Image 1 (cartoon, helix red, strand yellow):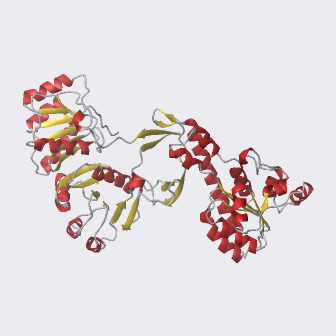
Image 2 (cartoon, rainbow, N blue to C red):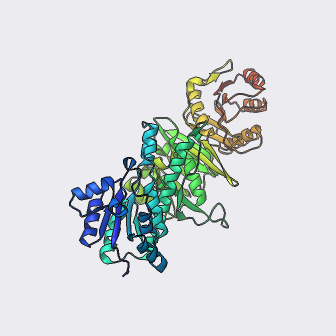
Image 3 (tube, rainbow, N blue to C red):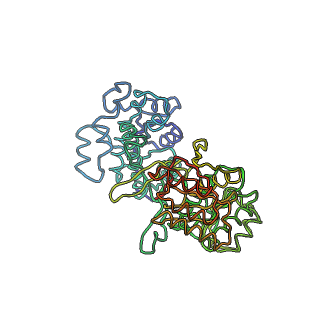
Length: 515
């Protein structure tokens, strides 16, 4: 039971949701209510006994309401610490009244600014001045004042008010919420004034709060946590249906798997096996089971203990296949009841449903010492009309399907990246080498170890070939053609090598380097 008593309140809100029932409860408890403008009219029209702020300040609202609460008597009444005798005496000396409750929410600046159809004067008018001032004052003085900054807080407040449980820890939480709110509010205003710079925000100060502690970071000696943006505080990147807690490394890998499996434009079913952010197998088929088996076939060793992403619901047949291997996470848009029953036997296996709205963020950000590097996420969809055949020979229809698959997958492989593919998926993947020819050697070796043929297979490269050595190596293994961005000073030499070997080559004129 708290001894905190509310004798007097200020109610001044833009969003009127729930304000009348709240004021009625206060009135029934003999709380003296002061209000302004539209809030005063709303309460008065609903039969609530309410006084105007100007009745206290003896100063009228002016400038279309821009100046109404900016008055010493208001701030003295909010900031007066009731525990301090000098504060009480000062308030009495100036003829002020103490407030124990402040209910304020702010003009919808962000909604107006982000609407895209408002003029500068309309946006500027939505910059709230008095509201944030009263909120911050009440929050600073949470020992003596309780502050409500959003209608969602009213229900709990009313319950606590009736039960006499407006204790200090509760008031402190409400004060914390105010400073989070006003911080975000000011950030939006700053963003508006900075504008855009080269297509990126001129001011970058997103606000996040900690959602959960993770067991550790990339390694056991590193602390880690997941933070959510204030714009979507309750959202999560994945709905987890079962399994162990998602680790730091899992989160990174799962995002990569989601982007690979969801970003390929096809009417067929897609499956990716991923390890350490790199696809180690990618399959396209008419059934989920066939797509998964095709992905596994690329590298039946590396996918062990990895992540699987599919673009269709997991059914019984696919679930049974999953249980034959050790997997860390499965990402799918849905799971049938039969699939869940089967997979539930693997208690530690994480079953995840991606939240596209959360994961499809348009920017990639990386800490850079004390600074931040920001870039746009590269569009995964290409205008294939821009692809140019630069050799005498060209791809047939089967090779073209392989080119589409290879070019999609290579975008998600760490550079220097080389992907071997046919019309149904990957044949071999080479990633992260210091030279491109070494990546190709790895991809060829992987294909050989998996017992896959390289005849009529294509190569996808994330950046240009600096020398003809990769073309000559590919020709030795019967590879049919190559897709790459082009742009090397030795492009003519590489094209000549393809023509000598009867291979085709397409330039995309778009680098997809992933550092």
